[in-house]
Image (cartoon, rainbow, N blue to C red; front, top):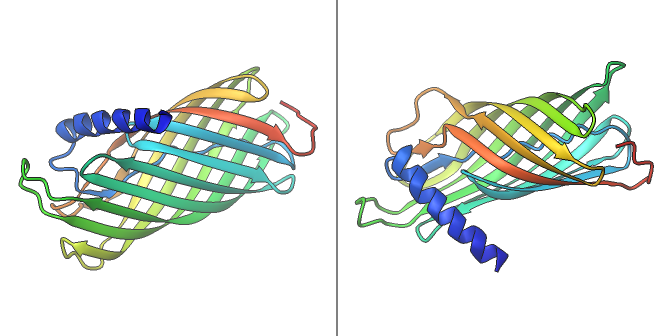
Length: 231
């Protein structure tokens, strides 16, 4: 039931955005909600689920040491004609200074798939592509009381290793994605609102589109394997 509900939301959202932003929703790349965990100590496991104008997804990060963490995530956007999903993983460094300012930076990569079936209404043909991505994601944040606020900048390189339809060869682009996030909640759960822009470096082929803005609502869960629980 929950999955069907998200499907209905995704279909309506996709229809509205295609009308407002895009000509035919032949998506070359879809930005995802940025996971900014702001880890404090070894043993923390921070997971989130989200939904927004670019789809639904989930991320999870684990602090393997007091300064190193690993992160994984997945994303989905689709309706009756469009299917787009991506998977990613990264490793990062985090620290907190004496003024309770948090710094972190993740380096990672992933895989994406996008397909749009023929649409007679908009006279579009079959479109299919697969891509790899490599990114670096530094962020800075604060945690005053039950609040968290963070500013991140993801720089991502997207390279299509297979673009079957339409035939576009050697297609790759760099996207800059500044992101602002606000969280509020308790020790175990926090709710957040996140927004950002996806700015391509260079003009995209006229046959492809992308989302220039992404907004998401996130629910995060915090768990300490060590049981220390500094939050």
